[in-house]
Each structure stands twice: as C-alpha cells, then as structure tokens.
Length: 189
Image (cartoon, rainbow, N blue to C red; front, side):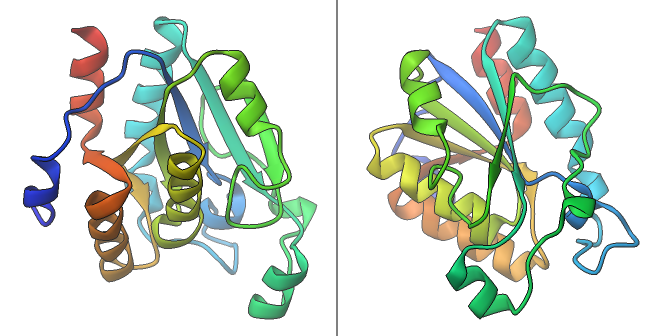
C-alpha cells in the first residue's frame, strides 16, 4: 500500500460516524459532460454499498453537489457548474443534499451544524475529486475537530497521480485511509 507507514499510526474508529458523498453528480459522472472523470463508474458500487450500510445502521449519509462557482473558483477555472450538471448520480437517497460552490463542503453550508447536532465524531469521505473537493473537505473536517476517514476505493480523480498523492498527504496529517470493506467490517464489529 502506498501509504502503509501512515496507516499504522491511527486505528479506524467509527463509533459516531457520518458518510459524506462528495460531488457525485452528472458533471463528473456523465460521459457527455466536459468534466467527466473517466472510470468514475468503478467506485459507484462501493459508495452505494457504504450508503446502504450507513442507512441500515441509522447513520447520516450526506451528499454534496457542486453548482455555480465562488469568485475564486470562477477566476481559477474560468467557468461555473450550471444547474444542468447538478443531478445526483448514485442510486441511493442521501439523508441530506448540500449545495456548495467551492471545494470545501463546510464552506457556506450547514454541514458542521448538521454533524454537531447529530453528535457525529467521525466523517467518512467518498466521492470526487480526491485532490480538490475531497481533500479540502477532509482538511476542513480535521480542523473543525472531526476524525477523518477517506475511503481509497470509493474516491476518484482525474488520474492516479492526483488521487494517490492526495491520499498520501491526507494519511500523513489528517485522515485514516482505508478500503470500503474496512469501513463495513468496522461498522459491523
């Protein structure tokens, strides 16, 4: 495993978790979209399995949809995501869908309030893009006092380099990196 040393430092704890599904929308998942992430369909079954397990155990499943653009996002990328690309792409119904206009799922949303009011202590992150929205949300969650778990085989990116570099960085200072099966086994134990 690319981040084996980092994974030995912290155990996977899921005593009070919530599942976050970051930006799994047709903008990234539809082959006709200009931002389609080739191969993203490979991680959808893992996300759906995790979602069903979280629902079964009575835990929150929160999805984000990236729409529009903050001033800096528009300046950096030169565009914004329109409503036509804001359709959730999984075959599960999240507890809540939050709309955001930048990388961080906490910024400009009530995510933190939802997590705190439900006494959530761990956030389990899945979704796209690992090196942008997933990583920014993971770092923000850590700074806000949540234990962070990023599911390696339920996140996706433009390429493996971005994906694994991001996971390596997160494993070093912010998150436990694991597989979907590890999350399910821990939830069931």
